[in-house]
Length: 372
Image (cartoon, rainbow, N blue to C red; front, side, top):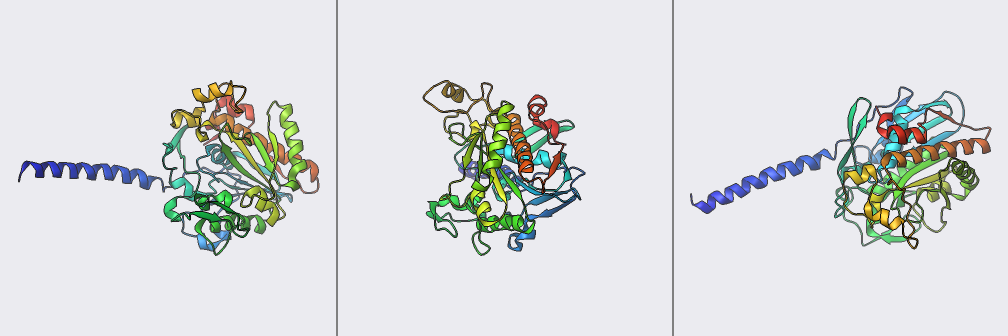
């Protein structure tokens, strides 16, 4: 055998090794994150219970139910609508592993877009996962993509036409769960997922619902509570109470002519009062420097620090960054105050959720201390 044959075999062998390592990492993204539900979870189910067509697909995802046994309001909370917005998923996980219901019901879907947790966004250098230190050791969670995995719905159209409005958006938005509502039982992979979640709302007669998100510090709706008009008074009271705690939230009304979003389509299609909350996350932005797991966890970026000091640039960026614990704490505190405000305005149909970690405790102790 000639020397160039040995060289070719060596490169072939090296290619096999690299491919094996890459395929291992690729396949590991399909394994679901493990949560450890509180003993107060009364039952668990799957989203396919509300849309059998998604059974066995990467659109199916766990649903956790807390039932107090006392009549009252039913609450729904979604995390992971956009899997790369990690504070929403982790806040939902904290609730699943901690809270109890004294009145009414709580339903939590921690990974609403399960498909998106199996991939990362191309060309963004996004971390595949991140590690949190808990009281009993380290836990690894995945950091996914904004939309569903393209291998689960391919190809993207050049133009996405929302069903049923016909509103036109970029083709990649066809995989965005928060552009898919009210969904379509006979539609695409993502439209079926949107349909399943709306069917959950209708079937379980959900009274108040939450969708947890994050966005870039330069986006206008950062640190906001976005509401359908039917929830404006509830949101206004909650924002005022949060202001008294020195937590600033802006109040935004859902635009009536922007279709597909949870805070619009849920409210139009069902009796539920929906809210969407946003936190400020530098890893989502376009001014950021190095994109890595430290930025995801610590939220510190020198370029955002500089931009926040410029008076002609609107940036929502804390002096010490926007760490994951702060962002999760904001979601949990907003959730708490919105429920209290709902209860004040609906005294005949209240819900009491206990053991929600306090904002300052989450920051001081770290969010990992509230995970098992």
